Length: 194
Image 1 (cartoon, rainbow, N blue to C red):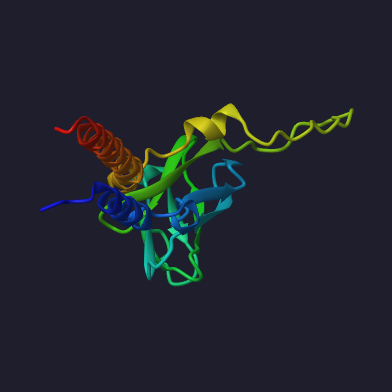
Image 2: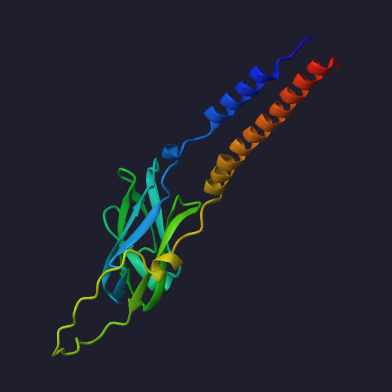
């Protein structure tokens, strides 16, 4: 029985390429933004989580229960965790700071953390200091070192997806190389009369 390896190699290649997800089909990673990201004790900041995909509700939480409390629509005032409904992939909650320092606010499913943001809280001042010269506004930069350090580590599910995205084409390439070697070696045997 004579087996033709060329059609087999082409079939394996097409199957491997059709199973590889395209970059456009990959879901965007969830992000959390605090506006403003720097505030004083007693002030309120709005925390917005986006890229939540098909979640029905998102759970917000803080790293230290004494750091502050959440409030907003559907949120019990004064709580340190808040389950908020997701609308069009986004969820919004307000946070009131009660102590100074850095506060980490995370959003997740209730079982795992999807993303987090760090806000800077300063102590409240009794009255603003008088200013005789108005400061010149500094130009805004697109990215800062503080934003880079606040990035959450990727989910293990996202890492597994990236691993499969690299592994499948690698396996397909190995199959093609082996198939090519087999085709070439069989072609040489037939010419020599083996």
